[in-house]
Image 1 (cartoon, rainbow, N blue to C red):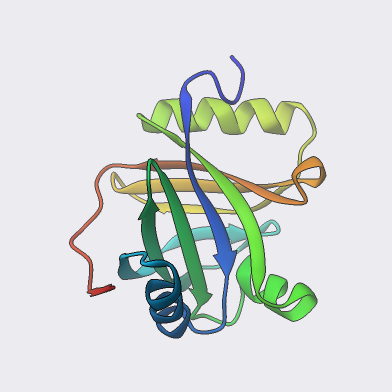
Image 2: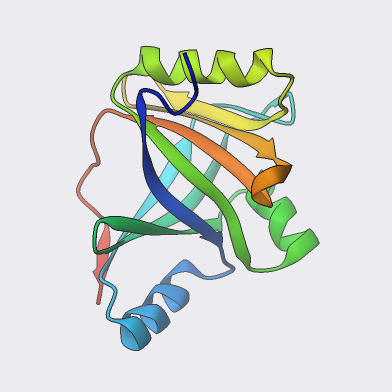
Length: 157
């Protein structure tokens, strides 16, 4: 199985300091409508360490594609590392899968290639995600399975 054989390109993500401010600015400038959530990840690893974390996320549709904005909330995550090392900007591209089994197979394939799992986590029966360092992309690749999106906390634009 290849990593992309059962997945779909889902979104391109940018890490920001203030997700609401950035979403409002992009809504005004580009006309993007954003839905925002706060995500708590109870079971997570960051560079091999078990550590739960949280973040704010905004998703905005553009034609058939999606932009994602992420603002770290907790002190430790690859998002915090990115802001400290590179500032705001491109972080990852995401491939989404229809089932948890499919995302786990894609994860196993990247691990078998010797790729570095930099962050991963999930919540039982709700979602699972894994970030891999992919230098060829100039950032990370996220593998995502999401049972369903809850109603957003807020909409901007």
